[in-house]
Amino acid sequence: MTCTPQNAVLAAVDELHGVLSVAEALLLAGRRLDLQGLDQEVAAICAAATLLPPEQGRATRPALCELLAQVEGLHARLSAAAA
Image (cartoon, rainbow, N blue to C red; front, side, top):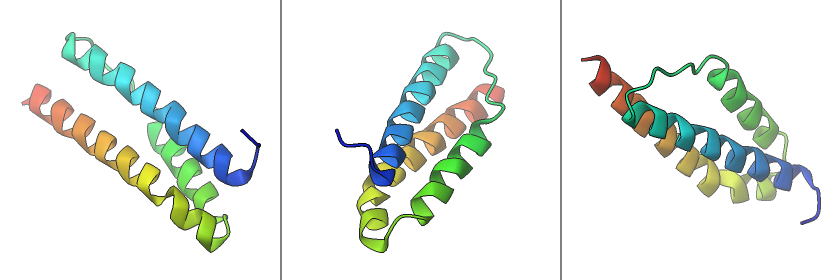
């Protein structure tokens, strides 16, 4: 894969998917989670996406929407576990 800013954004999204998948597995196993810095990682990805040319930025939208859904799902499970 050619290293382009768009590919870098998509690679960062994929990496964060992996981190969130591990967090979900740990949560299901009853382990405590340390998500410190997650907001900074998401902010960096979003900032990088906004710097892309419009067409490339739009092309990253599905991946970013999937990431949002995963974050929201983890948030819901964390909230349910805390209740």
